[in-house]
Image (cartoon, rainbow over all chains, first blue to last red):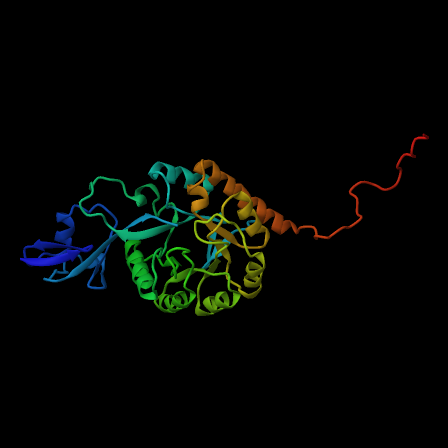
Length: 67
Length: 265
C-alpha cells in the first residue's frame, strides 16, 4: 500500500498505480484537468507512464470562475 | 468600415471589454452575462478539483469553451512569484499549451493591492518560459514601463481596488502609463458602473477588464450589455477627439447676429 496526498488529503492505494489509473478511479477522466506531482507538471501524454510512489504529493486542478 | 480592433500579442479582438467569470449566481447567469457583454477574452481561475463531487456536474469550460472564447487564466489569490508561476504552468497544461495569461500577485488580503515586486519577479520567469503575460499592476508608471521592458504583452493597471467599484480614481497616472508604454493598456479592477468604463476608454485606454461590476449588479445581464455599450461609446468618443475643456469660453452655440430688440416698457 502507498499513501499519496491528493489536493491536501492523504489516500491509500495499491502500489504501482499510474496517474491514468488514479484519474479513472476518481472518475474525473471526462473533466479538463492538469496535474502536478511533487511540484512538477505531469503532462497529459505521460499519464499512463507516470507511476505514483509512496509519499507523492499531487495537485489536481480545474478551471473555475474567477476575475 | 474600418476595424478598430484590439491587438494583443499579435492577435486581433473586436471587443475591448474583457470579463471575469467569478461571483455569478450560477453557470446560467455566467453564460448569459458573458454573452451580453460581447467579451471575447474572459478570465478564469485555477483551483483544486473537488474530488468526490458529482462526476457528471458541468464544468465551467463546458459552458465557456476554449473553441469560442480566449480563456485567460489568472493567478488570483497568489501572494508570491513562485505560486503565480506554478499556477500558470498548470493553466498552460490545462489549456493544451495556450500561453496568453493574466499575472496577478497580491500583497494584502484585505485590500487585494498588488505586490509589484513579486509581480516583476514572476513576469521575468514567465516571459522567459514562453508565456504571453498580461500583467495586473498598480498605476505606478515606472513599474508599468519595467513590466513592458520585461516583455509583458499588456499592462493592466487598477482603476481602484479589486471589487471596490470605486471607478477611475487617478486618471493622471493612467495617462502617464499610456504616455510611456507601447503595449495595450487595459484598465483592470475597480470599475463599478458604465460611466467608469466609458471614462477609461475616453482617456485612451485600449480596453477594460471587469468582473464584480457585472456580477454584483442587481441585474448582471443588463449591466453586461450596458458595459458593452459604455466601452464602445467611450472608444468612439476618444477616436472622435473631444472638445477642449475651458473655464469659460463666451462661445455660444447659437448665432450672435439677428437677436430681436428688447420690447419697449
